[in-house]
Length: 112
Length: 115
Image 1 (cartoon, rainbow over the protein chains, first blue to last red):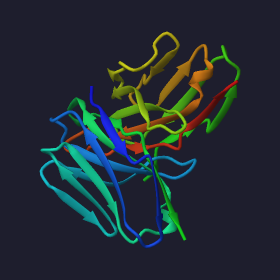
Image 2: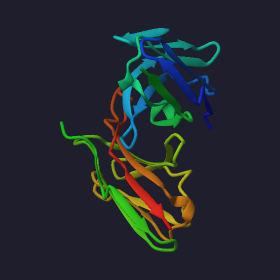
Image 3: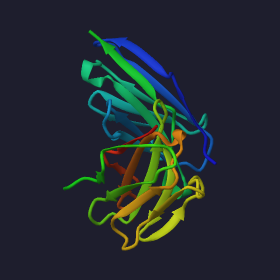
Image 4: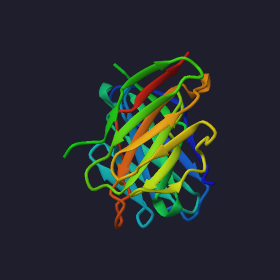
């Protein structure tokens, strides 16, 4: 089955700094890579995703980059704010995109 | 658009007892998933339905877990008997299931504590 590794497990940054979280996957057929944000006690929510036909996608302060050759994709958050503090999960699909294997999560803390 | 609904939100039971969770997906979503999220970990897929049929239940502990989606809409997940290690948040998610839309929408989850 698909194996997804996510690093780092915890990340602490100062407000206004950038944060980068990286995931690697094993299934070369994977073609869809979402990132979910989960605040304490709440449901995971999709914040950005990327298809394998592009190398980068940006949405305001959030961007995702994909390197299919190396089989890794990264989440970039610029100008971090306290409300960015949460656990972030990457995921990679199997079964033709029908199901997702999630990474182990990154606890991001944005300090004032 | 109403989101994925789940109930109950919290449940505390003793080991060896039974428990059931309910999920109502977003209207029109053919694909429904149940995930188990243990504290500090990512969601782990237990079972996937397409309409009322099971697509994947390879990670469902079938000796104690069961799930159904009889009319292709609501779904229930049951644990009987529960073990201490079943303490987790059980998340239901749904997806449109057609075309190129892969996005899964999660419900608020049911937090289960087994004592």
